[in-house]
Image (tube, rainbow, N blue to C red; front, top):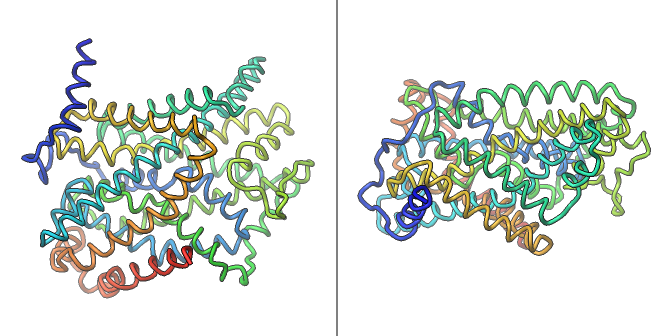
Length: 474
């Protein structure tokens, strides 16, 4: 009862009594990454999630394979990297959450209001993404448990964990949300950093091992050809371009404040431009590796008689790819398939967890810093609220699941990233940006980055994002 009363008190402070005296200071509960490697692993973990291991290969399968891969790589470096740098610079300079950070760098009442609105929109978007993300991640946990059930001769339980159903969806989503909240409640060093240091190398090792196994199977060469040889005529397709843009922003966790907040935990001595490049390379590299696993695996499945083409003539994508085609492939391998299936879904679960912790950190950091709340209490209150929305999505799955994914990843993230670029280019004073960059790189003013990035993020990034989003509208 005592703990419940503390949670109620926290809820009351969080939503009823804002603490306006505690804004824009480094909270006693605010942590910091201990090294560049720790930051890169954590930020890469945020970027490398289901958006890479699941979303990227399925988007590639659905949008022409190699043509999508090439467009994704172009947009990742032309648009996502400059937007990532905007978030990291603003975050480290302000040492604050998204809403307070944009307010802090603003120099007028109007821009302060817009900044706060964009900050809250980012927190809402991150929370909504986590609402559907924990459902999908729960499926990953279920498919990870299923081969264990089969090995122990409990097929009925194995079927329950993998068959679509209301209570199965809710139960596994709850399990995944609990895992996420446990990490965030532990803080930056003991939670986010410690988990990322252990899980990211494990993820990479599992991914490379599975790629090696699949590429040795019959049919994988056809998958490699589909994945690596582009049809350049497809690259002018507006749907392909918008899908690649959404994938780039979603996979790098841009627009919702995760990278801004992680930047706020970055040491002042680090070279922030180099760190941004490392995160971008890690994100795109693992996305490409995931494609090297999934696309050849689909063609291996085809040689075993498994249907990999939908009625439309395109390769099967989305949930059907991960939860039907690949499990059928694993099942055809016999006892070895149980081990491969277990390893594959461990890989997906690790990727999901390293991303979900960054999404939950967005609203939690605001509650801790702007309302002076205990981190653990704020974490569990917000996790319960997000999970409640997830339950609503499970109950009304057909009507809400795809809609929320489209609103958040295809629309909200690019638009919010455009606003962050506008704030970095038009509102944030240029000399302050330069001073922030010089803290980790004294000669940055003489580099190519400083010659291009301020103009690029001020004019080209917002314009290109607006054109690409407008293209989808019209």
